Length: 316
Image 1 (cartoon, rainbow, N blue to C red):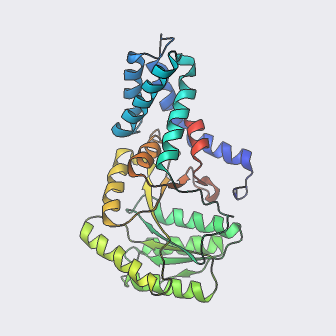
Image 2 (tube, rainbow, N blue to C red; image 1 turned 90 degrees about the vertical axis):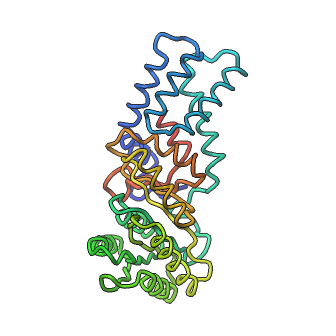
Image 3 (tube, rainbow, N blue to C red; image 1 turned 180 degrees about the horizontal axis):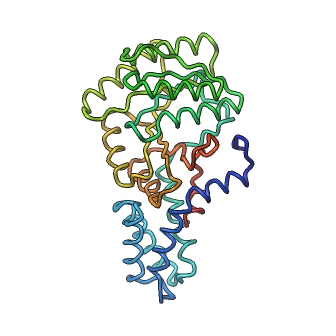
């Protein structure tokens, strides 16, 4: 059973429902308009549905794949009524996410694949990267894990201060150096301290600059190489944090970061208060990278482990 923080399964579902409300209303209204006056899914309905999904930030390529599979279902089943359309879309999208998202959910109370389990977190400034690290640390700590945080974003004083606040809240040590210090040195110190103190999880915050891809690539490579001197197979996860409320801009950020470094998981934040939650489907499908967490509010418990089935069921 997944660790639910202070919540049970019912409360967790309510957080997902409430956090996705604007996206749900947006998608549902567009699908309703797409099938208005129709009792059967025909080419016109599919054309309208294609437009509805694209304008819901699912993305063109992913939308075309969904429509193609719906066409196959309509042909094979001879008759698909509009009343069954949502269930059919749920089935098609669920299958696509399962195919493209090979990563298993890593629930907070699960036994970790190794110790210390090292996560390097990347992403541009403003996407909620440091806050996401804090929320992950809090929930791992609540599940009984010993967590260390590394403040390797040494270019923003606010990032270090923010991480310190979350460290206090979660009861986790934060390893930091002076402003402008070498980020790789901070990462080294964090892993050395975590290893010496038998930590379970290490989360390394990194600078969110994307103005120079080559410089970013070099910096992230250096951090990874230095970490390997302490923990040979670190980092075990390179997590890219994206702001879901930016819609198609999140695609572009994902494209840039996957070129700059090997990204192995995603956290998509700020889905509450936006109608652009369809971006989760598109990014997961296009980049073939597991979505690990989704952010649905301000509280630590509002960061949830991404459950593909529950997400699709909620969205459609």
